[in-house]
Image (cartoon, rainbow over the protein chains, first blue to last red):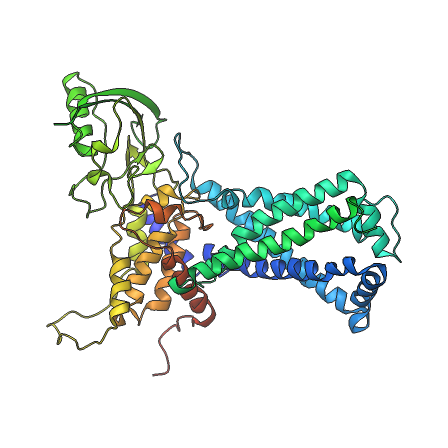
Length: 231
Length: 261
């Protein structure tokens, strides 16, 4: 393409929409990421009731299904499905753009500032997508569960984690969640323009602290079941 | 006087944009540690010319770190291993005797290789032409201090204006994203009163041109900030994103034939 043609292409593209632009899709990724990290945080807090026994846990499950006359859970599900869809769509299109932007790589590439977490976002994201499908079939719909009982989520939770492969996949997925959140939580502040030297360490520490809390508590569930602390 | 160095260079040689390139090994013997990196290449090239071979093509101009012309990725890092340094400011004392040095051009779809280590960076010029300017009728100079500018904004504008447009940010970015460059250009105008009238059209226009040039997108690795010879901060990218969000929400389409006034 000649220089003149490229200039014209650029001028035409100047009218291009928010969702077609690189920064627009990054903002979609950040905003849907906030919904998703907000969900995993609330999910982790709600599930701590597993430590309060079968009655409290099943009562919580019943509350989730009955709030707003049973409509509440469907509102949550719709929002989460939309956020997940937007997150996957923006990640996929941006990744394809990024791969096309460097068709020939370096022989002696040196990474200086990037982290293992930032470089593996695509992989941790794909593993998390597979895990979400498994997790829903395991503890929500029950197809991947050895003895699923719709009336007793607590029993499903305990017997589900007694299967070593399921517990192992769960723990691996949580470690991926940790990598993904640690870079993602910091990243959304940057993408949404929340950057200021005075708050630089605050946003880094917020990402680290929240990640350690969510992943630590989540991993404690299968560990508690396997060691017999929850039974 | 310190000991001279003997080095092995692995240099990317490519005849033109359409040809395939390959790495070729050249010895660089008896190199003074006081030479700059480009002077070392000059000496290697003199040897090649004497042997009747094509010299290695590389970009260079001012050789004092302010023009942004010199480029090349040295052992996987744009402008070499030292921070806040352009290739022309890099001295051979930064290398060890017997070391192998790999030299590659900036790698990006938007920066096609012209020859060897020289790439076409006019994509940057087209991004500037899309909005990296202010539209004012120039005339006699106005009074000094007629426009009050807070010191902090003047400093932020100057820090962003330090960008020499060399493209090291694109070369260092694992996604070949130009967002550090574009954000520096947007912010050095956006911090100043003269830049305000076009502030929100500028951010949309320059990002649209950046996308049209097929640069990648930022995934917040931070490689650009380390590679930048002028120390441009990633905070500029955050500020650009903020301006883009505001511009996208509030812009009004141009009215054909002008407004009611």
